[in-house]
Length: 134
Image (cartoon, rainbow, N blue to C red):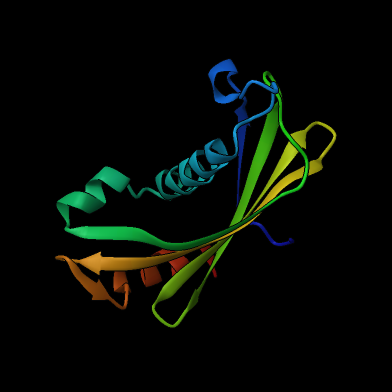
């Protein structure tokens, strides 16, 4: 993937690993979600603040390919870009072990927006896309 508009450095914690000493598959979903939340914060949007506006980004689908495991203490970079297709916002994520840049995970996360509990075209998020030049 190229043309990331957001990158975030993280570190694997011991309790995220399974008995084999590698990051549990489900933990990667947390990494992806945390990256999206940090992205919003980086452009001045609070996920909690969206709740007060009754705007709810909701994951509708995730595709994830596991390429190489991360282990306790590994540092990694979570990279992301986003596009809009119809009413969906599609986040493309890649996680690379740092510093060797070995691809660990590649994912596609589809998100829809609910406003006041109803499916929305996501005008607020269109403004976010304009802020980042997407």
